[in-house]
Image (cartoon, rainbow over all chains, first blue to last red; front, side, top):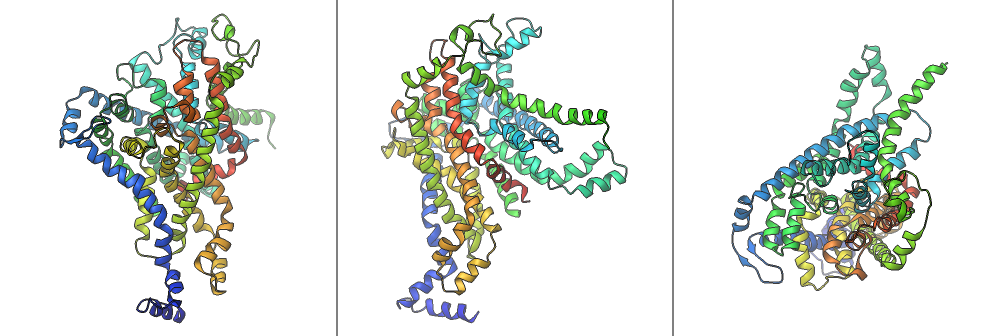
Length: 310
Length: 281
């Protein structure tokens, strides 16, 4: 205590003295800010600056390789009058909503199935996580081939089971294309839900189940009144995480459908890409990307606050 | 004593759902693998039973390695993943250590900002970043992605390491301080060596995320010689004619193998990292 206050007195008023430099560096706040300066500067330059620059771009008419002219909210007004934009908004919400629901229910099922006693559990868990760790683009390309219009293995199996030839046109029909991308997103994300929820399940004390059983609770009642309430915080965090990244998904759609047929699977990210990189309209593209911001900001703030409570 | 019948029922209750999930999870990889070793005469013949290989061949692999720049893309991908992972671990530690151990004004604001940045998805930033990379004349250089990948990886590593650092007991550091070690010495010599498992978790995640990245690489790297595997496979192996699936699946499989190998060695660390953020609550 005394040592600390002496050091403080030493360091502050007579910083010119050579001894005090070491003491100054030893102060927690000085040490911390010096340590964090480089990474914070990096993030400010490559996240902070692009973020605000993106907002500026969205207010400009800015063809690629030209200088921009400030046009105010013209890009956003153009978006509001663009029927494709509204289609994109609806698509994004359907995609995010349905895929999240499927991943949550399927992930819970996977976690419950894994939360039993059986051999080779670690091996099974490692195998089940593969869809989540393999680079998305590469596994999506396998799905593209599985749903190929001419040689789809899925359709060949369906036909073998009695489905009328040639089987569904998975990526050619607008509704089925949306169904396909939702299924593949679910396939990839489900292990993340399952394994995280499994870790949560394993923290539920066995006594609680025993107590519930003694009180006459059946399987469903134990799940409904013991498991679910205890899992709620984890379910919430996992869901928020996954909603953010599903909402802004790009890779899967780019590889499977490019947003087609006729914009039926176009999401905000792919549409912004088409406008900015395809048509070269950086300003208009930035405005489409920024249209994600309100919903994303809400989710990010909610999750940040929730994580911090921990 | 468990009777025979109930043991069978038990096994069905375990393996029926587990089997369903395993088949679902692994079939696309199985399909990828057998496609890559089927001759074209089997791939494009609807009268051949598709689920097994009748006359396996390595032709697609030979074609892939000799006719495309796949090996170069693999080298690029590895280089980018290793360098950006290393950068991110160093910068992440420089953020996480003060936040985990020091008391100073603004600490919780910084921690929240880092969490928020981690959650910002790339599609929100790619247009301004593309323009920035152009203005810096970094288009078609690996520097472009080595600089931009850490924008996602640094906040991520910092967040994961922060959680890990907090679980390390403080006594050793306090003892070192009493013995007169400076803060840097304490951190470097006493604290960081204790945190190897945390670095492995964060490192594997960062490496996997770098290998998985697609959007920035797609925009910044348009020349074949600088492409990464995901972009090379999508941009160059999907061609106008129909008969490219064997090579494409060979590329997808080979591209997945580095991640799968690293993952299989460190699966426990990976799962620990995966669940760290969410289960603490």
